[in-house]
Image (cartoon, rainbow, N blue to C red):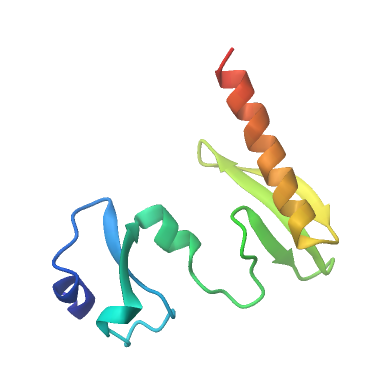
Length: 103
């Protein structure tokens, strides 16, 4: 059993312990929090990645790329000069999906 699970009193699925400062060796209580698995995966610190879900840095074009995953398939939404614009494209896509499902 991992140290951070012991310190957080064995959170039950779908909750997992998260290291706030991204240092998996820093198991101080003030650095641990209980979050959903989805949040924890989206919270990972990747160099050059976006703070927004569905947005990543496209090295070749030197622009922000918007991409979502639907039914295990990747849907490309485009390249954007500004990170926030790529995120807005992601939000617009999901708003369209939501309105389609509410019909």
